[in-house]
Amino acid sequence: MKKHIWDNPNKMHFESPHKTFNRQCNLIATGNQIGNVVYSNYIRPYSETECNGFTNPPGHLQNWDLTKNIVALPGYIREQVRELTHDKGGIIYNFHHWNGARRIDDGFVLTTRHDDYQLIKVWYVNTHWRARAAVDEAIKYITN
Image (cartoon, rainbow, N blue to C red):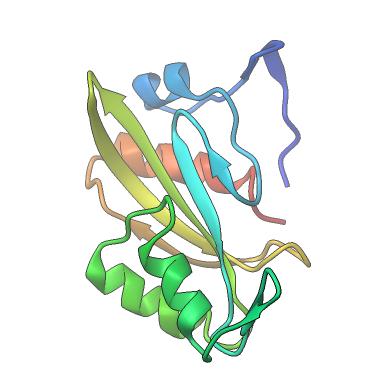
């Protein structure tokens, strides 16, 4: 995992060919995050049923994580994430930048959970090479 270097107390140093992403990036970290250029959340495995003292049917919590949390997944990615996290869960990251008030998705990254943060899959949704380079650089901060 790449070590954070700080430009100032509120902004990590991020360097890629995507100058807008670099400028907007304050922090990229593992786990649940709502940041300037990243939204992320845990995806529970299909078999996990306990939450806050309540028992749910198998798949209910995973479905909640895939449809109701902060990361809005395109349908084809959601179904692949559902399949890839079925047994062990994972963390899904949405990397994006802003053009005024419009969010531009650059890519989605799926990693294993807090045990080892291994890369499972990457979906590049912005076809520009700079967006891909920004996602590739961001992956270094969330995987071992």
